[in-house]
Amino acid sequence: MLFVVTMVLSSILLSGLSKTDLETQRQKKTLATLAQAKQALIAWSVLQGDNGSGTYPRPGSLPCPDRYNLGTLNSGNASVSCSTAGGTSIGRLPWKSLGIEDLHDADGDLLWYAVSDNFRKATAGSFPAINSDTKGTLLLYAADGSTLLTGSGDELAAIVIAPGRPLTGQDPSGAPDAVTSYLDSGNGRNNASAGGPFIAGPARNAQGDTVVNDVVIGISARELMAAVEKRALREAEKALSTFATANGGKYPNPASASGANCAAAIPNVSSPTVCASDSTTCIGRLPEDSVSTFVASWFQQNGWGRVMTYAVNKNDAMDGSGSGCSTTLNVSGQNKHYVIIAPGTPHGAQTRPSTTLSSYLEDPGNVDAWNPDLNFVTPGTANTNSNDQLRSYP
Image 1 (spheres, rainbow, N blue to C red):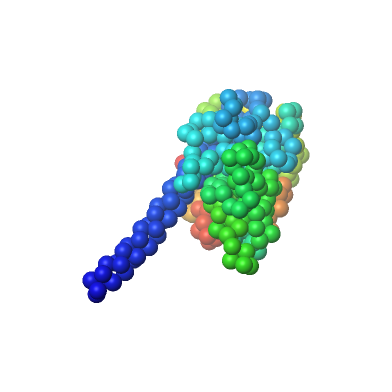
Image 2: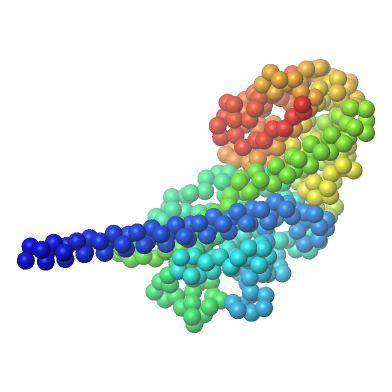
């Protein structure tokens, strides 16, 4: 009898462990799939812009969701347009357009995807610029529906959702193309809504019933633009190097921080304004007129020069007559010919465009740099929340 009882208890214990292990493996598979989708979206976004005035002339833009009926010829491709906020801003992940396999969660369902209005494909002929000033608009809440997971400056540019098993009332077989057949709502939040606010499952209601089993991963504007900024900074460094080669080793004077168009957004990349160099200054913004022939069109179209802080040693400037400018430019004590800083997306109380440097940079050693002393520090030296990226030469 003792032997039988022991065997039964052991069987129950092993069965429970197996279920736990199985659920853990399912969760790992879903999370790995979501991470793969996220990286594919960021990589695709960073590489946009080389087609000039085409569909996506803006690195940082994201593809439209797949709104085609499941199983049709175009299923898996990004919809042609998501120019109007609403239903076309949410759909399945456009895996064909991303050039990846058709990703599924642990339950065998295709992933779903929503994109912020600020990063989606815009109406033809009216593309607002995307650069470091562009903020996300999508919000994600914890399972309780009240705890905000996306604080100021970490709003999402996009969200990817693994739908999990159908809950009561959902019918994927009867309505295979309806968002509500897959994505859940509960505790005051709705994953089936194009604009959210979204909720991270699993979530239960007051009665203890599961109302959301969606697994969610977000792409914040902050992390997306950090990747795009690396490309923009490489473009700026290349342009300055080419400019110096063509001008006897001299670099362009910066544009004034408050110069014409230098503190303005670009509402249409098809007709950008120009933030021009100023011969009287050695610190300000990267001058769009000086680098125009040395950069790709997307750089100018999206106003990347005007969101970057740029300083040049007075002796290395084309017009070295900047009033009070220093002949010494350094980063953490190391002498430099020039410094460029990409500011990351605004967070906290930062508001852009602005003529105030603290609206762009975080480190105290850098936010006072719009004065002639030209002493910079490596971002993050005194502010661990800094999302700035600095490049210099040498």
